[in-house]
Length: 353
Ligand code: SAH
Image (cartoon, rainbow, N blue to C red; front, side, top):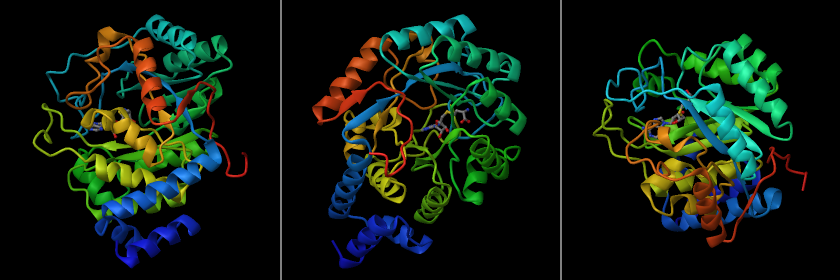
């Protein structure tokens, strides 16, 4: 390992900050030894705050109907081969009940931007879940909405919101999205969510088309400035019915490297080892945890719809019952010396432990 990268890693671990140029260099000149050193430091920071606990979030994929046309996404509106579904309120409540029985204390409702889920409809579901399970945290991941809508949902009881920024580089953003979508609106959403008192998650795909070490440096700087409570990063994986079908997937290596960097930039961040990471490598999620992640998100969706929420090809966990999915993840975490915990798992400040 050259001494320059060693210095960069030490600076990052101490100052939790680098310049844009330094972030870019940290990515460009990486090597296996640098990755190992970063992972060591990232795990040490994570252990100081969260120990060896891994939080579980029960993911309920409520609709694959979407009005957007993101070029990378398998459920984009132009994909005519996508078999569309929407869960009823009763189905969503059944998923939550099953999740609660299994010990989940955070539910994540995720979906395409389905116009059916108006503020009234969604607020009603949020209220219902929060009144039946007041000891649970409720996370929404339903895309871009108005500030007023986010305010109503927050008032109805939603605690957290996941909205990946996708890329902090405007030109890169525009290359991944149709012209009718706007980088400024995505960023506006994140600011509104923060101001409304949500725990907020941003994030991006690793290895998305047109991504460079320079665009990634922008992502890292954005994370340093925004200090999200959660940050979802996973490899880009092509979907056969999208314009990016022939683009190669992101790598486990770079995803894990960036997980370690993000842990060091903002040590208290809740960082999932994503399903996408588990899709490109059989032990991807275990590797993510060992790089500094501390969250996993088992699938609670009804088995009958799981294959239909296909954002990318070959997505894992689409055949099993929820209980199997949870047990499988639990065993995977134990295999690398970590334990699943089922409390709400709120973000901690650095001095809370
Ligand atoms: N409609 C919601 C939820 C989107 S799905 C929203 O806009 O936030 C959640 C995430 O999956 C997206 O933010 C995106 O980063 C990721 N994703 C979409 N297509 C993908 C692909 N082909 N490979 C990997 N991740 C993908």
